[in-house]
Image (cartoon, rainbow, N blue to C red):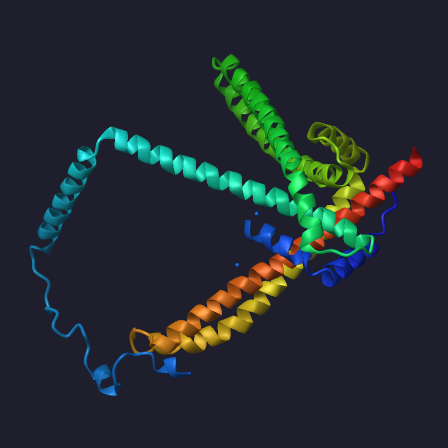
Length: 338
């Protein structure tokens, strides 16, 4: 088992993250794709608050209101049903097909962008650790070159996951039918099957998360083919399971604590002015806010969302830096042993 200086890796990753700010662009992409005068509030003067816009409402509701309501709802439902029936089925087929193709296109584009950003960020962090210049111009092409291999590797991972899950389902299902004549054994088998399926999902999630760490860097930094990267990363995960798992816990703990703390700070910074602007709107009943108040709320919300994504993007770069440095140490140790 390799001897890992976790503190040194974390410190070095933070140094690279602070120094090479062009890498934040890739972190931001990955974060997006895997958060005065308007105080017067109302549109009128002070005298309007003495009158209510609901003063002309009847004091007593009609007795036949429920019956009339049902009639209106029934008529509306009938109109909607007639409208649906009046549309040709071919139109529905075209509409559903169009929406499905649009969603598929969006998924593929998102996958392409994520693969590009991952490849460029991994390559950029390697350049940064070697104290070489890091810009979008010299890192983006490396991300483009890695897109195809990273996507194929993703498909391999999906296929293997589905094969394992289907195997477990078939085993549980076959046992269920074999024991259909015994109620007690059937219940026991269902319970054991649920436990086995749950543990299988946890195991798959844990193993695949570790395999991805090594495979993505083998593809980008060592030019491995997707299948060769899969086999090699599985071997590295097996032989370095404990240090990799500990590094995973450390990076997750840092990311969770820093992410939660930064979110709380942003909520405090932006929550106070939002509350100051919003309280007059609801004071003594709802008042439609003035233009300045609306613009101020939109600006505050926009800055909050942007800064939240920026913080998440910085954390993504920091996390990728940790795994780049950890990967380099594992590979270096393996080469020394050979």
